[in-house]
Length: 188
Length: 121
Image (tube, rainbow over all chains, first blue to last red; front, side, top):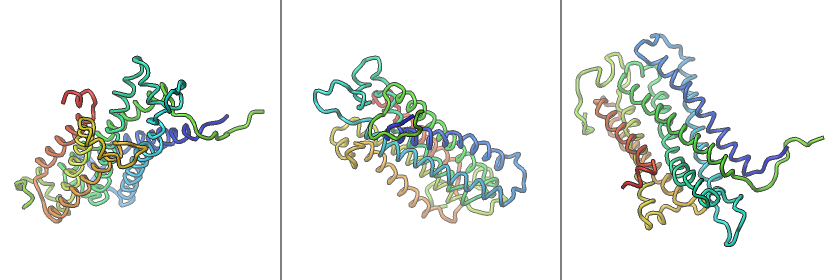
């Protein structure tokens, strides 16, 4: 069983950082509603507070890792331009998608949307983390601020979901492959 | 408040009466996130529509214009955050108009990143 380095980094970007971020988003939304909503218990423990602060800061780190590995490690392989006369476009996913009318929209709609909308996630969740770090339990006393933070966390979930969906579908239609081979398990 | 948005005495609008911290720094973070999100969409459309802008946005050749679009948006977001924070630090501001402005900017940012909408411009 083996995997190429490009495929490995695509996995790290999408399944490692991106999917973990998406999973964490639902947890963050539940906790923000539970702790700071109108019906939340008055006495949240300091430990509870510290946990959510750590959780959101970790989410922000995950979001930034996702977009930076995507833009600066995986995306250059995706958009690589083949030398003139190259017949086999398997190592050039963007060109492979653009070569056929049946697949061109995976790039022109999917990748064009994904590569930009994904950046709304780290911006939104960094703001949410900063506000929760600064206000902690006092956020319960600022209903409009809580509404603003929750709205941005919802949009960060949406943005990450859009990016994740298109990323998975694009990689299914034109996988980012190549580079050296990593042997995971040797067959018998 | 001297941040340009009129302050209202209603605690529902500014924060609860029990709030220990002023809402200014939080408001600055929320509005700056809206500005940053809008900047992503704006720079993306600008790089798509203008060949010159597309060229300027290539900060990293392997990544192409995406590198400049996103780096510029991050810079705009952080500058907006620093400026708004400096202006509203220690103050209580009317958060509803701040939220509305931030969410409008966020919605515009989302819309501008959608290629089918951007193609209409």
